[in-house]
Amino acid sequence: MKEIFKKIIIQIIEMQARLVIGRYKPYIIAITGNVGKTSAKEAIFSVVSSKYHTRKSQKSFNSEIGVPLTILGCPTGWSNPFVWLRNIIKGVAVIIYSKNYPSHLVLEVGADRPGDIKRICSWLYPDTGVVTAIGETPVHIEFFPSKSELVAEKSELIKAVPSNGMVILNVDDEEVANMRSCFGGKPIFYGFSERANVRASHYSHVYGERGEIRGFSFRVDYNGSSVPFSFEGFLGRQHVYAVLAGVSVGVSQGMNMVAIQEALESYAAQPGRVRILEGKNGSVIIDDSYNASPTSVKAVLDEMREIDTKGTKVAILGDMMDLGRHTHEEHRKVSLQAIEVCDRVFSVGARARIIKEEVGRKDMVQHFSDSFEASRTLPLEPSEGDIILVKGSQAARMERIVESLLAEPEKAEELLVRQEKHWKMSDKALIEAKGRGEV
Image (cartoon, rainbow, N blue to C red; front, side, top):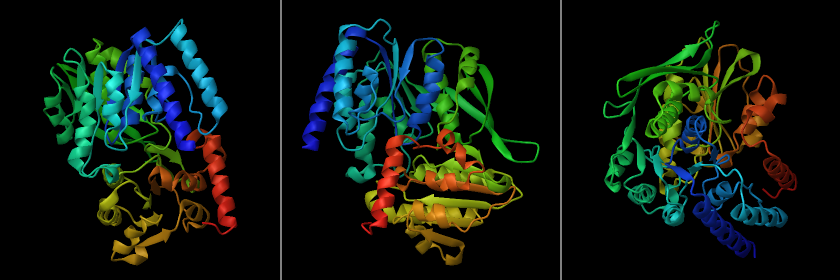
């Protein structure tokens, strides 16, 4: 019954979204990839919204439900039929009359299974398509027969862009760069490579007076112009790529580099995306708890390797989900990199147990069955200068561990991912089930 209800809701809101697009004809910027979609969306929104009335996908609304909801400007109803009824009524109202509908939409488009993007693009018709990165072993590959089929699914977004539209591709990811063959026009390439039209260079870390990591800086070159960027409170080349995507969309919209630079001053990492947080006893937490894939874990461990500190480096790594037959091998690779980079390693979850099992020096890695156990019993008393990385897939709920390590845990709601009521309710239900011995 629940599945039937879901299908009916999807059909209704998709039909309403089609009608809204047909009536108001907004300029649509659609973003896909396996790494960095949401960060790219935020950077692109920062740029485009500085010039146009723009709406973006909330959080990670990138599915067959999330995309239409963004177009309609409605929240998710989860399992509440009254919220869905209100959404449908609002959808009708938007179709009939909207005094101030956005001129531009910035939308994430995801693919959990074959056909997802092709199905959405059959009615979405994006004006600009952006592809971030696929990665060596992409997340969600569990539901695709092969990596090539997942790449082909992502390329459906590019095929949907008309030749007089714009395609923006991460040239540092070869499979993404090769998608240029799916587009009838001339794409914009971004990345660190010399092949990039919008190119980043001189990436370096920014430190505070006490030598603590604060952020990063880099330069962006485009068509003879070179501008510096500097950000504090978060880290990572993934954010450089997000900024490059934002710059690329900006220049495609006719904006100059100075205006784009000013617009991106408002760009900031979303909770759980390589955020720098203050930990106990003067330690630093690198909170990358939003999600995890082999590519993103490798990237943040490479980042940890480059950071200078007088303290110890700790990695707390949770399950990487949706890897199917690649699960064991990818967790094994993570284990080898983690013990090379860090002084201490903790693994969390059934899949992440492989990290402990694969490490020769087993005393170096301690395992926890889940993030509840780890957050309560983690044998870690950090000191000033220590850097603690927390990373895992959404299902691992690694933000619970971050909260236990915060200098001010009372600020969890403003600092961490998944602090909304429905997530907390799911925590409560799980605790109760554990108390009854059901899980």
